[in-house]
Length: 309
Image (cartoon, rainbow, N blue to C red; front, top):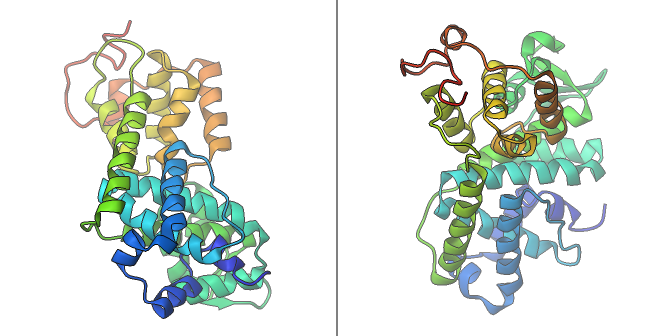
């Protein structure tokens, strides 16, 4: 690995924190220092890419700028609001998953241990302590990640390299979501306003309904959860997808809606949406929604699609 490459791949790492401490970076430096103009530009571009869902590959010539841009992007996203911060957190997790493929297992272990406090056992495989594993997979859906389905011995969980990268990416999300919301100096505040407008337009476009009619409370509640970056159960995802497809949303619109889910995987989500579309599944009955605990209130409808027939 080239010198400084860990800063490019993991600007949240222990090495990055040490760099910031050593250089004594202040908020005013980040906002006004002419030498950090490129870092501010990269932060803005990073946030735009987060909104668009496209990875911004790092400037390989200047790892330090990558760290500054990461810090500025977090502060600006937090200033915009929790939804934007969640958007950035998901983006950074996805970015890390992609870029970290070039890290060796030893480097991943060092990153997880030094930055997030993971403990490891390395005899007969790669084992992560149960607490770190459980905290990391709390936001990951799917039976594979349940402890009951894993090999656990003497307080450690057997994982592979991809599992470890995924766990680290979840810790990245959690760390970013802890970013405080503070007043920003004018140059950063200006970027925050621009990003806020851009994000609002994007969300408005995403949630534009192609057909008239009020969505039932259960569907509105599920959409609100997605907008807050919360996970949905498999049953909730099915109900929401089937409903939206039946009222005229395209597969692409539905896929876009799910992009803010913490464990979003485009390939899997796209496949599941296509499957529901091809089979022309109807959304569950109101009775089933009640049994699944997905009916927030009695809206008086006889069935979910009432008003869309």
